[in-house]
Length: 320
Ligand code: BT5
Image (cartoon, helix red, strand yellow):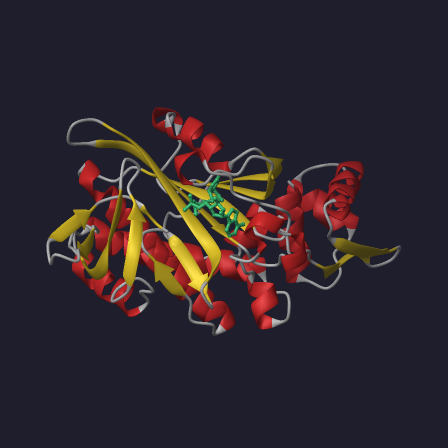
């Protein structure tokens, strides 16, 4: 209902309570209550006895109505579950992904202003205060489970493109899931999946972008290695616009991936690569391998050339 009221308020400068009540088939008291709700979450709405209500300020909150307004995707973000705060958008997305039969569609989004227990890979913590973009997308791709790495890589390309569009800054991608600006992490991706032998049941792609966060607010132990878009561009950016740009880019690349045309995405990934051509150490859990990152193959695996010239294919790991 509040969403509908906003729609009318955006169309005209002033709209009377009577007109709103008539159009929405509710009482004028109900209209007033919805207006109060909107004010409570940050909208500034002034009222004039004769003219009615006028919307004068929209907050930069990641509210569904703000994100969906002007979003040109076909299915990514058509359904959005919004939370001012939750533990982790990936946790909720994984719960919801199980309910495909009850109408949870591909492209459903979980988004939060703040996460109290944001997750990185391998149980690591993800710092998620107010000011960032923390969201998860539910997907049901008809692809083999081996596509999981490619989904992470295409998400990284979509994130780089969105950041470029909104800030003119060109970030780099550190294989497999880090987006860096000036060697510091500005964004991370956590892809989770449920699969059987050769089919995927669901995929949840979680992404965290440090948009409007002050560097001094980051925990001391990660401050040196992190950056936010606000710090780098010297001003706050529109999180709504950035989220929209990301969702649009994501859908574009996801469609390409579903056509099994990963090679064109990989080409772009390589343009933004921070990893290729470098001597690196990769933590693979049970061992650490050192070598030169020479390529990413068609499956999204990193190809490392060891000192003895042996080539090793790494599907998952962390560059240290
Ligand atoms: C990642 O893990 O980079 C995946 C991060 C995914 C976060 C999103 S937010 C929405 C969705 N819901 C979730 O709960 N998660 C996803 P990994 O490669 O393991 O990196 C984790 C490491 O990054 C930590 O151990 C810290 O060193 C560092 N880190 C933590 N918070 C950070 C932040 N806000 N910005 C940059 N680095 C951070």
